[in-house]
Length: 86
Image (tube, rainbow, N blue to C red; front, side, top):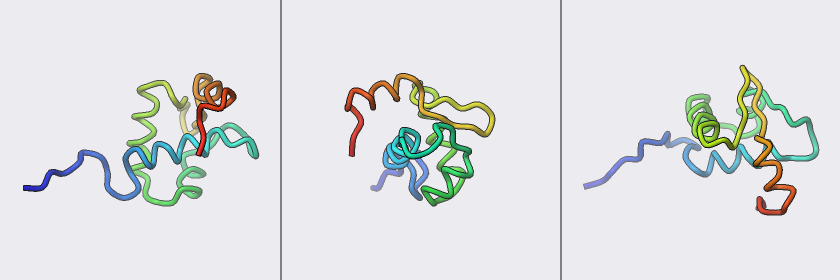
């Protein structure tokens, strides 16, 4: 018997969440991203992106205001401390 994850398959799950965080903490561009910019940069489809953003927002890793998404102050501080890396 196989089990199915409740997370979207195409680019979803923790891999997508990590990719989102890494995009949001980049220091070579503005800290705010639109959902469309993230989708363009990461590829995939909007439903898995929305699911991942909701999960990250629920735990306080990202801030979402309308269409704008940014890393939370806590996530930025962890990056400054070198605790977020590739």
